[in-house]
Image 1 (cartoon, protein in one colour):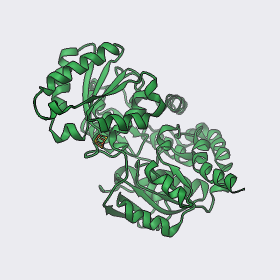
Image 2 (cartoon, protein in one colour; image 1 turned 180 degrees about the vertical axis):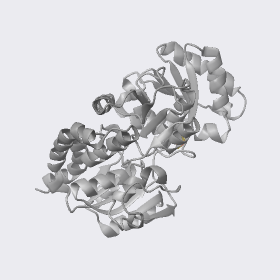
Image 3 (cartoon, protein in one colour; image 1 turned 90 degrees about the horizontal axis):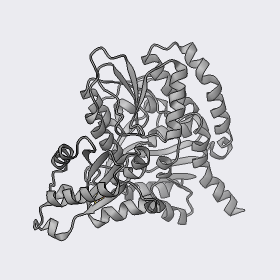
Length: 426
Ligand code: SF4
């Protein structure tokens, strides 16, 4: 955990983070392709991996695989692994096939996997060679989504980092701009764009946007605001380009969204009265939507297994806006710099665990018998069979959850398993 800069609250009250290492039950970073390809509409994701990787993507994408998706796996065969085929020639052949089939692709991501990394296939080199060949029609980038290097949402972090490195540089003396970082559903992007316009902050750009060809120019006049807590690598890339980050709680729930917007407003010198003017009504509406689920969640004991790095932010939402009690909040990584404001808002004494030892956590879960356990698909059904209500954490990535207008839906995602349980018990 990196040094955390306290933003508000009292540092001594901030819950301590305990580390745990052991068996993990999480997705690898390839899973990010499922939501990234929907967001970046002119990109194609080519995983260079094994049949296992292809199976993972197919299972995670579910029915989407029948909709001519913009992702595929170049499966490494035995002759590739045995060194009988030139991997770079093979890759060129597959890339040519992909582009013939999807001529609309403007950016092609070569996504590294465990097998490609173990045999040390240099995808960065392949990407720059292919880019030089295909420019200006197609840009080829690479990043790693392997289980060795990345956990679940870190795949998005690696992808956005690659995109940020590719962005043009700001012209000297460029006007200050705000860049929102994180793949947001289009509907949420539009809502945020309207809110920032009302606050008088402009221009506001999104990374990634809907078109990979429209990257914002980056440099010292760029302030960036993370929309997701798992983008520490992208933030480091942006810092290296001279941009500076705005730190605040993440936009989950009514309070979270206001705090996030307030952090940006402060950085752009927007007065607090203006922020109130723009946010008050919307925040209230969100509060009403959330309150519909409060009775079901208030006082309920909730435990988070480490999965997406969203855990501390969602735990804060459940605790401060829905009155839930947090038994344990596990997260694969806790980026201290970005999560400090969230940790400050968690109740003192919250059990925060970074990393994973799934067997020990399952023991703790069985002993505590929480009212709701937020966990991955592999753990959820076995726990349900033991009589524990669970929420599949992957849904929290696939469903629009950010901002005022989604705050009620976010609360409902947690309330639904409890409602279902009540209905089945009747
Ligand atoms: S990248 Fe690694 S962890 Fe992910 S599916 Fe492929 S082999 Fe499995």
